[in-house]
Figure 1 (cartoon, one colour):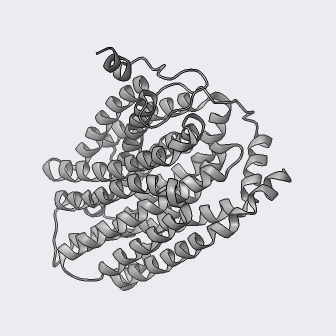
Figure 2 (figure 1 turned 120 degrees about the vertical axis):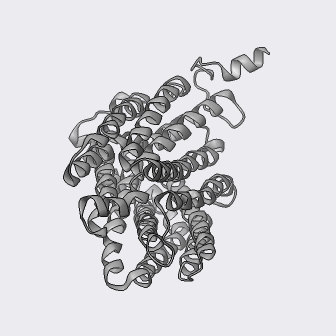
Length: 419
């Protein structure tokens, strides 16, 4: 009984000073759960407008490409803010930045139901993206500092699984609320869930014990970023992030329009349930964590890209059930790629891990922003076959970059020795 109390109490000091978290320990469980909750909230809010896009087109009289700006601008804002929050966390700590940005991010969500124009909604989404950036720009650095290297692959996989559950949950919740009530209620419900999640995060996440403060000055940030940009290994990881997220956001944006129209005519709730295909990503990101620890990130990226490519090709078929299978396959491959590439960058960055991961996530989310609206032009002129062509090209680039990772590893020591 005493052991149960020690493992699950709300006392955040769960590990001895100087000891990093290992699988099976109370500290590992608490930190992993806290980051899973935070990851869920971040991505549930980031993508909650995706099943609502046809409704926004009808209510505000905008085009499908314009409605996608509610996704693109939020993602772009989040990507740019990565650099800001990562640098701040290098100076003041990981836990404070994650907590306060999560808490403040609940404010624009709760204000969204009261807007009266599409431009106001876009401003709300920009503010959301800027504040939501605090968690993903810092979480990987926290993982790298507080978790033992033997647990890092599994911890990253569990964190990434929170991404998939959050992205799925936010879309499902918003779709159901929109059909039962309105899209405004979707925002209100997510805001309330966000407040509860922030409270749980505060009590669960152990404090940083291996964090070493660094100057938050502009010069320090620029020097750190430049060192990462000179690292060929990291650049290839950043390229994988850009093109994989380009595919991920774009595919779900425009499958929404495809399935909302004839001959499918799916309702917002039905489209929302379609995002349950994210469960494949939850499974793959967790499995890939173990796979990365055994076989390495290169093989995980290559296999994930091939699986995602198969899913895209399957989506050309007209049957709704085949489309669901295609989305499951794509999600499985995509989240394996993301978990492997992010773990690769985290391991290869020898210093300023927060800024290294911040730069990874800048590329990741900027890629998603480009895919969200950029693939809209292919949708406008060539419908789904045009979108498919864009997806195939991007995934082939991911595959080639993944194949090149092993050769680039040998250059890491030379690059950092010159800094």
